[in-house]
Amino acid sequence: MDAVEHGCNWCEKLQPFSNYTCGCDGSVGLGGSPDQNGETTLDAMIMDGNTMNVGSVGALRRIQHAISVARVVMERTYHTLLAGDQATQFALQHGFKEMSLSTVRSATLWATWMQTKKPDYMKPKMHHPQTKHEVHGHDTIGMVAIDKDGSIACGTTTNGASFKIPGRVGDSPVAGAGAYCETGVGGATATGDGDQMMRLLPSFAAVQYMKQGHNATTACELAVEPIRKYYPHAAGALICLKANGDIGGAKLNYASFSFSARNSSMSEVTSITI
Image (cartoon, rainbow, N blue to C red; front, side, top):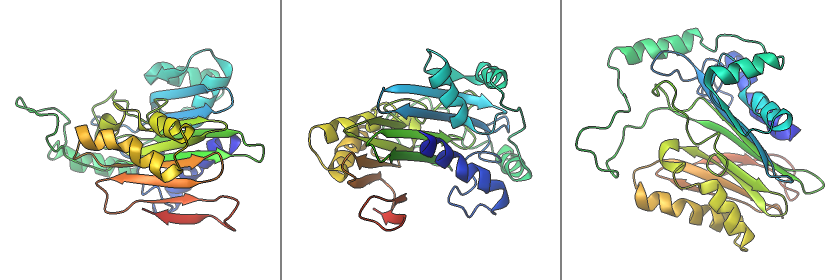
């Protein structure tokens, strides 16, 4: 649990000081992608594969490390998901500091968007569910970790879609969509067009496929197949880690997708491209 929480926070901590070369490309955390009001808001979740307990926050405002708030939701309450200003108030009650998540960079992105107000994420009057939607910047930090005793944890943190409608919550804080894990089986986490992916729970499906005996790669591929069927233009990726250390992934409409991994057969963290 500590590894997932601190791992998800790490890139956000580095981001404002790294010229956005640290792997988050400026879209997650402080100074990340703004919504249509110009505000940066965050979604996050963390899950304990031993207990199946989950903590999540959606549309969290003015609190920097969303996954840490999500962990407090999991460990200190009987709830699973808190959202919006009420989630901010909860964070403040538990010692988190309120701050603006906007930076000069994010304000500049918003000012540029204001010139066209595209994307606006509103469907045209004649809309077909397979119509290609506009793809704009979005990213998610997702992690799955297994400790020396075999316990599995997973988590996510994200700004969601760039220039999203204020109040929008994507797949990342939804258990089974953004991430899912079960000790003794494995874990999975997703990124991409969350509005399409969350409808088919790819992370949950992947863990069930691993439970049935599929390797990590096959489990990921089977889990994204329904998304490919119903939303053929959706872009995204899913990574899977099986309890035995097997690692795999699958992508949707990306030329390639890279993620970092390490298991007992690797001497150091390795970038894997699918």
